[in-house]
Length: 399
Image 1 (spheres, helix red, strand yellow):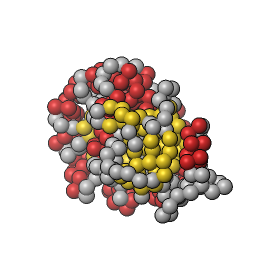
Image 2 (cartoon, one colour):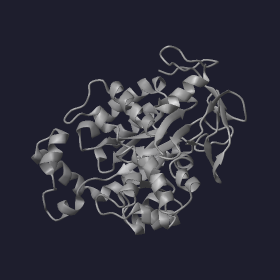
Image 3 (cartoon, one colour):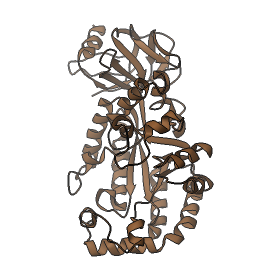
Image 4 (spheres, one colour):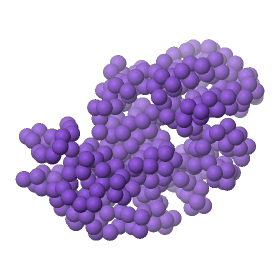
């Protein structure tokens, strides 16, 4: 475990206190690319000089990853059917995975949905309570995003109260009601599976879906009012899976500033034209396309319609996507890495991180230069992950 104090030292359990280090010999990523220059930090902040030297020859030193939307933590909280009784233990396990993938700031996208189970309103409250409880015990900066299903008209007040109670800073509006099939009088696909997850009978779930679909005309005014109230509280707002220019225009007028995973070229272009920040899925990039036939993230990046990449459902894809973008010749490494560091930090209003400039948070990823395997992650000047030869170098530097 890592703890803070005024100096740093290694104990028999390899405990490390507050770090004051000077990383030398490595290739440090700046706005102009990689350069062999030292990087110093102390008290959790990047500084001009000072600290104990650690030789990082053969390694790259890059800004820590900022994951603006990820729900990969769900599997740590809900094992098959049902949820863990100790959500704190699950969140700690998720934090270990985040750190092992170079993520130093993680926005954990939790549903508030009719889907029930670990995506239910009740579970959202339990999740926020657990996150608040363990936030000071972990190294990675864990932040909550609530994903609100817009057709839950009877739950607007409850949702708004939950946001206020836990000081949620980021809300995204979703609509996963299968409107197309319901409009045709068809039974939604995978209804039995959805019912099992929501702990309802298929009949009760079908009735609920039909009710929400029938009230669609009431949703625009209701969600616009909710968005206005949340924006007045300083909550950052996002839309999800936009399909058309009209979708993007509606959300922009409602005060939404971020568009997550636009599904079409039309929506991606519209969001860019309207000045809305565009977030694309890193797995889409790594896979070479969407898993469900939507617009390719690579195509949108090539057109300049991307401000940030998000892990979505797969944490390892975040750093892999940045390298993929560079290797595909879409941009240089500095610009590609900005999509997973300074880009998402800017969209979130986190001006203290995302680069390795003096005065920024000491959020650092260290990778083997040749293999580009992740070797260490440092978040706020504290080690959250370290493995392999680099651990030996850090230990020897303390002797």
